[in-house]
Length: 457
Image 1 (tube, rainbow, N blue to C red):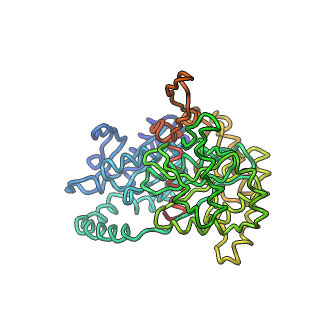
Image 2: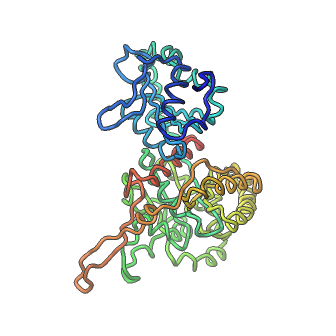
Image 3: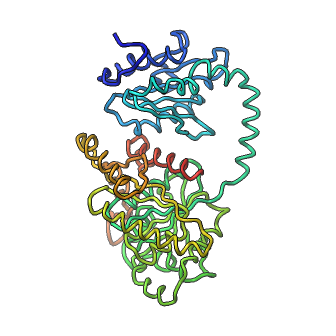
């Protein structure tokens, strides 16, 4: 029989044992919940909750209840964050727990956003039980919600005041000087995830390969004669200061719902670099045009070329933050040294303009293989090397290489043409629209939450 004063993660071999040994035998008694204060296998509408605790029985809603979701010890908890958020919003509960025995997390719902508030390893739960009690213990929640009605009025008033005050626009560059690391996939799906969280999003494609322009569904032509982009794209934004503001160049894209705005790129962009260099275009041009749109967008994401050229420099100069996607393979990791040096060059140029240094949000592990042995043994070592060898932060979220991510961007639709039957034109979707319940969609949901928390948006 387990020692009730301690919990041993290795004793849990499956989800059922996580439920019985961690939650029922150890956690709930430690948090002050007697058997009549919690319920298992709770059905609410079309959702099923593993556990629901009840701190204040007389309340007419679930505000003081805690949703607890148990997973198999081998499950990655990141894959279940989005669903937990859905549960909390559905039943209007403030606190939720995710655990697989090896890891223990607490989340809080705050104005329809899921906030990560606590985490520890399963073997350290006993050492942190007082912190956990302060957050979701029965006595603690009873005190928090005893005056819930009066607090609610105050919170609604404060929320209205905060919401009426618009947060400053955030500009994020997605950059790595090595290609093939998942940059475009990151840009378009992160933009979609932000949009679904109510953010007004602008994407700027500064890569002459125009992959983001394709991926957001703006290339509807089948030959150069019907090319509707070449006469108004990001080149014009940079080249002509007065006559091409963002509002003239940006195009609505419905590759995700709600739709976003995209400043497209074009294959001709690579031929314009020498021209722009010859006229000595300053990196402030794009920065100024973006800042002129501060009332119209909450987040701007800039896709960059995999190089150290003028367009990459302009992108980083114009941004507040940078995300560095990487497959963590040797060449990508070696390229991180070039990225760091390039960021230093950009920061030197930013200083005379009184711009704060570019903030590195982190290296994003992307296009990562999913086979178990790699994830268990190799991936942790690769992530540690980014921190130890290259002195760069690494984001908690991991984007794995999955079939859905490829399929959603390769979608096409047939149109009837008098000369060519069943003509195929690109019709991509974000993975959050293509398969909203897929693991890939959940990964980008988690990434969006992590980034929004880091930038305070």
